[in-house]
Length: 424
Length: 209
Image (cartoon, rainbow over all chains, first blue to last red):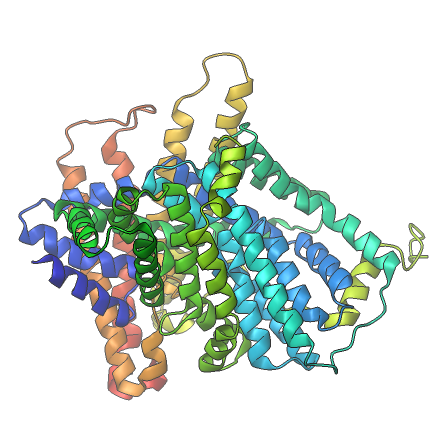
């Protein structure tokens, strides 16, 4: 079986709604058999891909996110955002961004944000007269803050594949995540200027003060996690464990979590972990095949033959990544392309940490674009808004995202300054 | 005051939440443990229906337990830094294997609840027997992959030469058993899906799927 056939088979199986892990595994096994390798190698490579200490941070960060979104902490954060930002003109749009920003400190996955709090925000906005496309587009776009802002699950996965420091990647992602938030705020502000009907309301300052105080304990989790990692007290995996323990203790202290709910929280953590890990395992097998076929070397020599200008290289990389993000699920795309493109990027003098931020940002944009835009499909499913409307709504925010992408691509300080200052 | 007189009304957490609810409205509810997301994928006849339901419950229970184990072992690893003595170097290794087992043990549950990450674009394009045919192809691909992987894992277990893991010294053949079980259960779910949902879908159109 040739490499081209293998990749075509994988893509066809993706389109035929075969679960991604099996769509990668099936043709890869056929490849191994055609090359006279033992099938045991496939099992060992898949297990070896999952069996990693840095990746242990993934289930624990998922646990932190689930505890944050399914217990009273969600109400506390949401209430604070509503009371603080809701009274502004077009306030619910700012609430949408603010809540996504708040949860992004605890949850590292866009789909979880979109399916949970994102759908609630869309319903609230529509009830208050916001256009469906604008509301759902904003929820889809703001959901992308989660996988970019640390603790980011794609960052943990990239760090594991690229053998770079997870702490450095977390630090590198802070400025891009805030830039993205600012870009969305600016888009909403400009839109709201043309909507005089969405008037502001008077503030209930007493409620605002109490709501903010109530939201402070949950916000202690990101302080503990990021402070622990960036301060050098914990590894990211240990920080994720400490963060999960803190959130569970907090949830118990509020006396609102039942044993049954706790079971659901741990079960769903396992379910999401299994979803991600099976793709990681399958992609490890595919990465081994790509390395055996010397694909990274071939791509590097093709790219160097095309241009020796790093700026042109980065432009090409962005176009390729946005395209791949449009047709592949981010985790599998990240796992497949990082071993291929990272050595090329290093040849062009791009720092692996900056490259990681560029890759993650690009692939997340793919969650908003047809044909595969995962966040749009999730939001369509949970809100009942037709998916083409969701795509149109998300497209409204894409120019702002692309400006941020170009900034992090062509201004290395946007991603490298903070890790340098922190000595990571 | 509150009914129990513990705090003045309008100043407690409930009043804060009420103020926010007045601005936006209430949020929806969550799902529960043991609930079947796709009961139509269960066999219609007893005792098979109950058997598959119970397998799902056991998968969930083991997956849930493994996540708890991962959390406890990572916390133990952190604690060892601050506790004098040699510590337990096996905690990290067992936590890593627990993550591998979680992935495989819950794979069948993911199939049964259509929770594996997959691209459903085709659902928006095709209807009736065409979508039933695609679902059948997808399930056949999963079934074959799981069977081959399960065979390969069985082969590793059967031909084990007594290797053990580095830190915990767990025999590798035992480490591979949950992987084999997970793959076998996934094959079972894929096979059931073909028999219970896909074939009726092919025969009767989209209503059966």
